[in-house]
Length: 133
Image 1 (cartoon, helix red, strand yellow):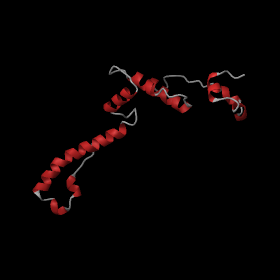
Image 2: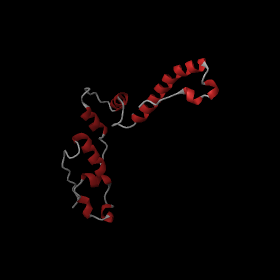
Image 3: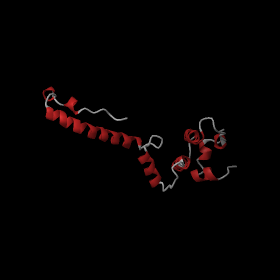
Image 4: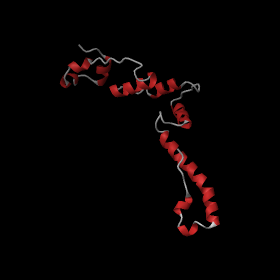
C-alpha cells in the first residue's frame, strides 16, 4: 500500500501559494511515495508468506532453490525444514502445505510417561533417535 505523501503539508502556510514550491512538491511527492513503498517491501520481505516477488527470489537464492515459477510448495517446504518441530510449528506447516483440515495429525507422547529426572539421564540426541525401554 503506497503511502500518500504531500510535501506541501510539511511546509509553512506562507509557501503554499508560491508556484516554485508547488512545482518542487509535485516532483518530490512521487519520489517519496516510491521510497515509502520500498521501505514497506523491505519489511514485508522479512516474512515468507508476506514477501514480495523480489523477497521470494532472495529466499530462493539464499537456500539455493531453483524452482519453476509455479513451484511454490517446494519453496515453502525447504524454508520450513527447521527441526525439531513444536506441535504449533508442525500444525502451521501442515496448514500451509495442505490447508487447514487437509490432514490428520496424531501425536504419540512416548516421553510423556517419564519424569524429568528419568529423561535427564539421556542426551537430546539419544531421546530423539533411540528407543527407550
